[in-house]
Image 1 (cartoon, rainbow, N blue to C red):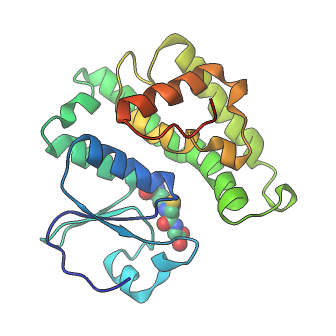
Image 2 (image 1 turned 135 degrees about the vertical axis):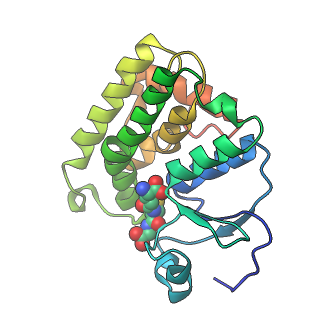
Length: 210
Ligand SMILES: N[C@@H](CCC(=O)N[C@@H](CS)C(=O)NCC(=O)O)C(=O)O
């Protein structure tokens, strides 16, 4: 990673990472002016001395401003951008309980969804491991997470009620790539329809075969 002068918001991320793409989806949807610095996770560019000097946690995504402030964690970056950019309020429910529900899904995504679906995809798709070499617990854990989403999306068009929130952006990031982790979304028809709906809302590529 070449040393660079920071003149505007800079997002460090890997385009193959759903966590990183979340921050781009929101920044792009809000028309935020930012520089993107590609950091290759498989190539261990998060572990170089130069990157660790910026983010000692050695992870992307990372947001960095010219005043020296940095913010790690995908969902925190999304929330910050939505709360500080005109138009961002449309991603955050105004009703406090609905906002609580959105936060609840954001925490659930990081604890119960990403830890199975993203991790299995990482090993299978990005590292090219055979199924036998991947933790066998990840498949049932990910399917359970998809089942929880299926139940919610049987009743509502979005994870929180009838409009897009940050919960949808967070959860779509890896759900749209779930097939690359060996998960079959045809078993979860409401989730599949929702993926397509959210991709359309965000004006991003449709990742699943039709
Ligand atoms: N909870 C964090 C997870 C970040 C994370 O796991 N980043 C991975 C890429 S998706 C990473 O940078 N890994 C580099 C490493 O572990 O060396 C978030 O949502 O931002």
